[in-house]
View 1 (cartoon, rainbow, N blue to C red):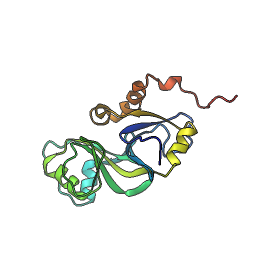
View 2: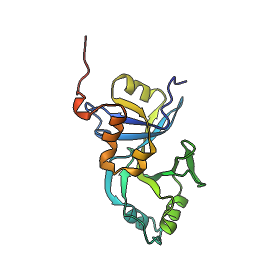
View 3: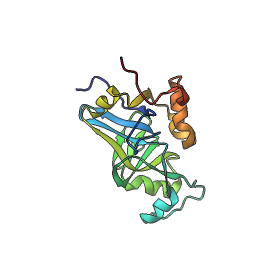
View 4: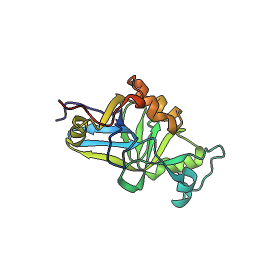
Length: 186
């Protein structure tokens, strides 16, 4: 069993992150347990908008005040599948409840509700997710690939995506300019 639980935390990619999927990424961890971890990248928009995504999956857009939000690259796993990080949790067909206010839903009914009523209003829509097998994330943390910090909903849902990474780092009192690409060796 893992000695740490990073559910409802941010992972901040260190500058030396070699994996191009995660370079300069901010990952929100929706689940972390002894079987592994699951999260979504929340600061890497794709060229697709939510309006375009809804049209591609034949969900008619009815909401009049619907913002044209970007769809994000959530990670390299199941990139053909959509995931909606949202608050409030609500009552959807397939939701991973992260905490009392945040859920991660992969069922079509949430997209239909978004198109119909614009609700839930606080959302991050991704294609794909980021996943780690048992012990893999802990190993990467030991290799100094990530910084971790408890997540805040204001960063997730109230800030423009361009500001999310820097704001998460500020929670640690760290500036990206002060991070180095290599760890010291004795």
